[in-house]
Length: 374
Ligand SMILES: Cc1ncc(COP(=O)(O)O)c(C=O)c1O
Image 1 (tube, protein in one colour):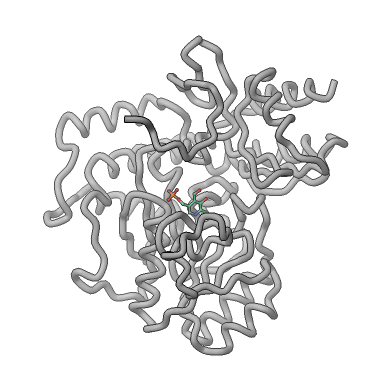
Image 2: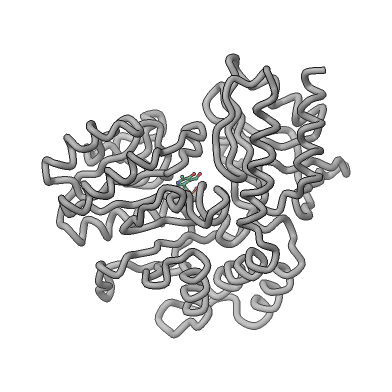
């Protein structure tokens, strides 16, 4: 059997990782400023993480959601504390798309409505409603194009107000820093206005923190820079440092009903032990603070490059917009300088390193980046 060929691949086989470094099968070492698409939060092959999941799989890897799972309870408690949402409720699934899918479903159960507002350039995943809320017609199959979603310009509050005031909007879903959309930031004024409107018209406000959350922005959640509390928060990617997992944080105003949501694999023992190990390391190594510190430094230094048109972002979620397409720069970074980076559209390079990136590694990146223009 052949693989279903949907990914345009770099011709590199990564076989090993440690911290912010990865190695290919020939032993070439790369600096990882991509984090496997913002997934590696505490660093590759962290010793504590390896130990915790090894112990768990040797004890009990999986049992179903029909019995008590104390690891889920521990995770809910620890996550509630570290992110400042003690009073919220946690539902666990396996991916980001599933988190958004369940958030939209719960919102619709809650207010009985079916209309969703999403931002232009938004990315919310590739399944049913999550892909419909994604502003990219190329990945919405006819079966997913069911007319639930209206896309509106980011930060244009009056456009969102006009729609919400109609009184039929089920949910607003928003990334406070758009990832795939090119590191575009929501303003405080916009999110505050949106939150007030949602409260007034009984519309559910969902912050998709799948890429910008879990410490990446230099606060636990990107929306916490903007002083607003959403009704639901979706997480995935960094939550378990590469073990597939997603989560939905749900405000106390939503009452759980038996059977309304469910999953076979979500919140399994192995996933929970991975997520608990991530929180252990985030706390012990102050990774949220590190993301803020190293991110601020990187952004200040990158702003000095005349070749870059604009540097955007927060913490270790940084976009470098160029006048011209970045394909060649990105390929040279990888092939000549051995640095992995991400991309958005044609003109933006995305930096999404593990949150443990050190100042030395940041300087190492800046030196390698400088060499491209020497
Ligand atoms: C903001 C955002 N939401 C949702 C998703 C979908 O997550 P997953 O690929 O785990 O389904 C992604 C993935 O890149 C994302 O960046």
